[in-house]
Image 1 (tube, one colour):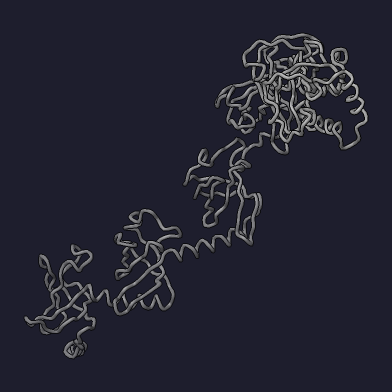
Image 2: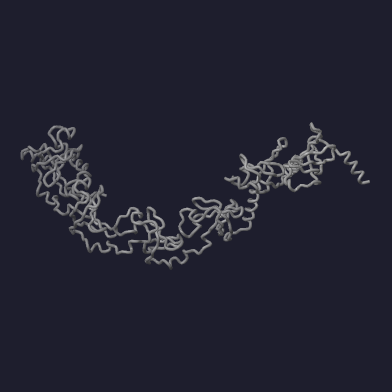
Length: 560
């Protein structure tokens, strides 16, 4: 009775094109498989449509898509691959509508991403493979992953997948768990994810933490790559957690012994130490005294006497040096070192070797606009200011009288031990001619000289012993003079009368127009000068002296 029902069911089976039917393998040929679906003719399926063709056997049941009941040859047209595609598509649509996940195997790299087999062929864009788009997509081929279906096109039977969304959600869950369960001081493990100039980002299984370069090692690092590389596994300590901004600060050096503990006991002030130069900067040199402990030799502590512009002029990276501890700051982790303290300071006994008034000799080592430096002994320089080169001449630059490399005699004027300065003078080798000026020049004397300089207010006349006198413009001629250069030239020999002598201010006033005056006329002129009121010629002469005060103060030091 049961066999009869089955026969009737088979006889009245619904064979609709586009439906899925079951069949049994009748014969396995070289390139195709003959299948009985209970219809008047058998179906033929290419052997390539079977995933494992060497495993199939005659009698095996298979599901097929009935494409056509008869072709031109009267054969039924069926497809195992299209049946699987139809079944899988329905499943994929349900997964998409239910916002569930689906597993798939990456098949190949294509333009813009990867193809994935999820029962049907789907597309995984490169931007959706991981949180950061990978450089090499081929590393994913052959691997099986879970995906979220983000887009389906029923008409074209296209499916677009995303793996990135799953990773982001997974990382968000892990971040939340990390922030809820981790506290400051905890030790955690992670892998170096990325290196920057200021530190390294550590992947703590979904939570990124920053390991700043200053927290990597007790020793000095110029770049994190000196110690770490991407992929390194580390155990670090949580230094700080900002749960609102989801930021974690990490420390690696804190997992090791702090070499700055009891630093003052190991490096007391005055102790002689040895170390290796690890870094040279414009202001000094860093010396590694032990692992994680560096000291700084400031450029000013390299020599008592030599003027060192850059530490690199006398030191080199990797060089072994000795130094003296000058000070320790544990809180700021700083040790000040000095090299010059290894030797006696030649300035400590400078006053025993040089005293004010002593005559000395030395070679001119260098010149500046304000003076010349003279090497008195190795490392000890004295300076001659331009104002101490001549009692009478106005020197604008020491090169007017001196030359670099020349041997020079001078007198010690002053010693500043604290600032390590010795002031020298050349003019002090001779007597100051202005001390005897009143005995050499009197009002009314007729003198001869050479014009050395012209100014808007008058002319400077060089007299004997390089002493200059000033002829005010009002004393050039009986006639009105608009411009000094109209009546007198530089280098011209002139005769003039002395009309003013001021030894204290080192001034001599001259008059060319009075050169040929008789004694009686000079007397009257002197009386007239004595009776001049403000605004008249004598005041004009005083104003001329004031105007020349910066140009014409021979033998007097520069005003501060």
